[in-house]
Image (cartoon, rainbow, N blue to C red; front, side, top):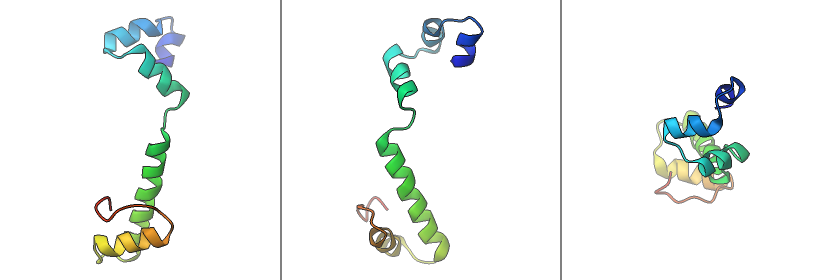
Length: 78
């Protein structure tokens, strides 16, 4: 969008052609990554790290590892 706007195409036209709303786009420009997406990414990294350490264990072990690391999560989420 920024490249199109820099080349002279208004953002309004680009958004209309793509079928995107104005307010969600501008909201995304202010905060491209939401707080919940960031928390989910950190949790996923913690789960992947625990799995890499002991790949033969299942979700119960991974749940114990991430909760011991301080994440508030349910077994079902893991």
